Image (cartoon, rainbow, N blue to C red):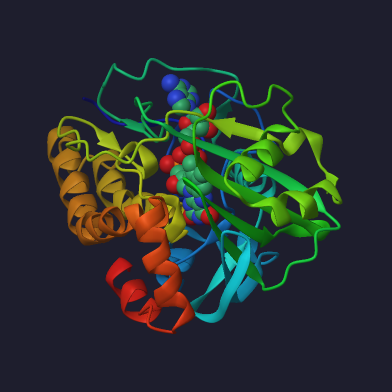
Length: 341
Ligand SMILES: Cc1cc2nc3c(=O)[nH]c(=O)nc-3n(C[C@H](O)[C@H](O)[C@H](O)COP(=O)(O)OP(=O)(O)OC[C@H]3O[C@@H](n4cnc5c(N)ncnc54)[C@H](O)[C@@H]3O)c2cc1C
């Protein structure tokens, strides 16, 4: 391929936008295709765990995270009963995707990136220079993700984490007094059809009645009510013939609060190899291999540990064991955090 080479990014979530922005700042030609529009609410717990200063610096993210809350404590609940407050091993950042993605998209275009929104691109074709940041793969799965923003919902801790029947739910303060309520639930077809009532119905079905009552007394942001079905955490062999970043590479169970950090870190890991390719210093096949090796090395242990722990948050017997460990102060939060990062 002759120079100048261009990068084409498919998918404008955190991975795609962060990569696009960093490439533009390095003066590289980048076009990004995003199926949706900005701003937009996404099913996400909206707390970012494990994002280090190196990634923030390398991707120039500090201005976008300046407004994020810094959370240091979590309160655990099991079946509606408060269990324990714990200090987080490291502060988490809290910011809505509605705000963060839109700010990154605006910065990308301001930096000269070409952004096509409302444009779904062929996710199969893999010409040289095309990078996929298309989010999680759709799978067959019993798990459903639900989220909404509520106001007038005072939190008992900076972050609340509730274990329910076949479910877990996180509450996290985002901007302007809104609290993000987001959970993973076993799908119960026909439970509720009204968008704004679905989450409450699932909370009640999960035995989280107090939380459902607190939500009923709060103001709901109707446009924030979102759902994703088919959320699957099955191990899928990573592609070798293309670059998949963020959830398209692998989806980590959401309890870790690590998915957004991984999306950004995957953009960071891809940046230098892509810069070398655009400048004509590498072949596309070599670039694909290098990026995939970097992603595998960086995320292998984190994904294994998270997948091992995830059933403890969802199956009733293991949840009881987990709640007991939290209550007695035996849950080794710090070692788990370090194994995940
Ligand atoms: C229930 C739940 C709770 C979560 N909670 C948290 C949390 O608290 N903290 C955390 O860090 N992570 C959390 N996550 C995970 C986090 O949301 C993801 O890891 C993160 O969004 C991944 O970013 P991404 O850029 O890879 O993908 P996405 O943000 O999903 O972006 C992918 C983009 O690609 C676009 N796209 C897809 N296909 C095409 C196509 N063919 N053409 C054009 N565009 C396309 C989509 O429209 C989308 O905008 C949670 C996930 C779930 C399901």
